[in-house]
Length: 119
Image (cartoon, rainbow, N blue to C red):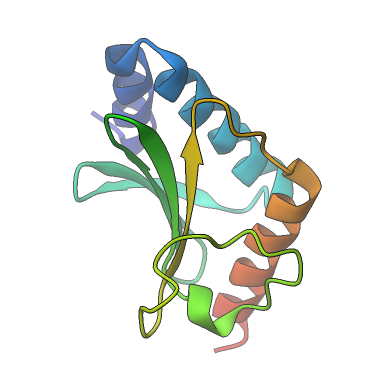
């Protein structure tokens, strides 16, 4: 199976708000940076462009957007709420009732892509 097919399968397997949320986040990621590629690593959807950008993890009570180089990114709107003590990474934990600030998230994704391109 291709990475995109594996992501589709994960969304279908979840079959609840988490699958819907991953589907929505996937679209937000691609809208923010159309050149991003989908991959499947560590049992999760991973998005790359000139290196790892972010991944989407599904847990029993939340979805995590994991930014591999998050500590190097500016987060002026305070989206990062997980892994703040990590040396290089940062995360955003989204629970069922949480709203997604799409414009700010897209800015953060574009920033991660630009960070990878600057290396």
